[in-house]
Amino acid sequence: MEIYLARQPIFNRSKNIYGYELLFRNGFSNVFPDIDGNTASSKVLSNSFFCMGIEQITGGNKAFINFTQDLLLQKVPSLFPSKHLIIEILENIVPTEDLVLACREMSEAGYPLALDDFIDDPALEPLIAMAQIIKIDIRAQPMDSIPDVLDRLSCYPLKFLAEKVETYDEYEKCLKMGFDYFQGYFFSKPEMLKAHDISPARISLLQIMAEVNREEIAFNALETLISRDVSISFKLLRYINSAYFSRGQEISSIRQAILRLGEAGIRRFIPVVLMASFSDNKPDELIRASVIRGRFCELLCENTTTRLRSPELFTLGLFSLIDAIMDEPMTSIIEKLPFSTDIRKALISNTGEMARFLDVARAYETGDWAAVSAAAENIHIEGDRIPMLYWDAVVWTDAATSSI
Image 1 (spheres, rainbow, N blue to C red):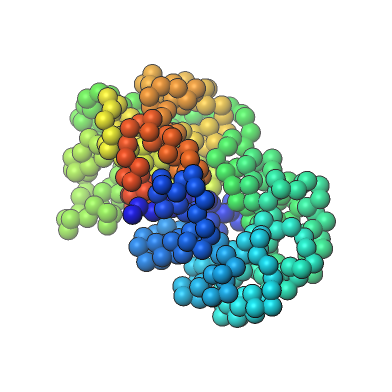
Image 2 (tube, rainbow, N blue to C red):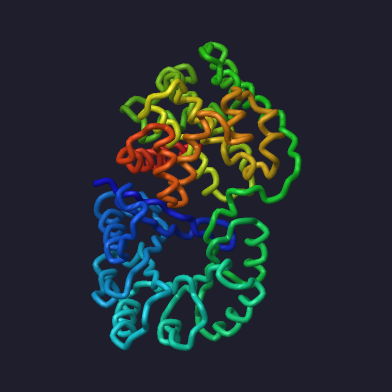
């Protein structure tokens, strides 16, 4: 049985990754019917810690996982390492004497507790007193009422996490209120709309990008262009000599590196370098999300019947967040980049066959399983292939971005 496991990023005040909340479904058969919380949490735990490897899933950061009343009473979280796990106590938990005792034992054993979708209620006081994190859904209550809640709880040694932060404006407001952590996709939206000049170094990179986007790459011309750019030459050689590619013999020339990567590899590598060059002062997670999308779209293409070329799907996914990276409207950015008509249509208006692949990626990232099901049908791919393709994309991204 395939496990549908997505993750939502959680940032600290510096917009660095603190952890991920893990979201679960166990296949398309459970997309529409309800699945009980005990089963969902148990599946997340067993598959995160035993099958996929929690450090791979979270990049060594914290894993926020929901636990039901029954699982807490059984102290199921204590079966797993405390250094990676943050226990999320759901909003419908009844703080009985037995439950409070179980939570206290786990807290004293080193397991951080987070109260999810927090609504101020005196009955929760015993749990508040031992919690490390309070999660507040900023869409579940008026924003102007939240400071009062934070003020009342300031007597406790708590950290506050704002959930469902979808814009930079909301992020700034929550930052000023005193929140410590932020969950949501605000980082994937433009911070402000402003034009950016493209530096001469980036123009050189765009020339290389144009070369790798040709129907047939002229490798001699590509070698010349790359050799003239010290930064990209260094990154290419570091990438090709990384553990991901290492075959015992170091590669020291640009020509050797290009030949080892091959056409498909160079079509992936150059766009990733280009993307990273535009990402000054942006969360690293934004670049990771872009690369994962690119590789995921490419793998989806390779596992379905389509006239589209997988390298173009990689480019599409990779650049689908470029407006957030450059803080500029997508339309004006695309005018500067050497993209095909199909890519332009998908990025600017979300139309055409290529856009359907992007729909799958966006839905999977957010754990919108009903949308994943519908989007998968649109590209004629078997649903049980999707989870492994996504995690293959995550593993590949770890190797690619570590060398950029």
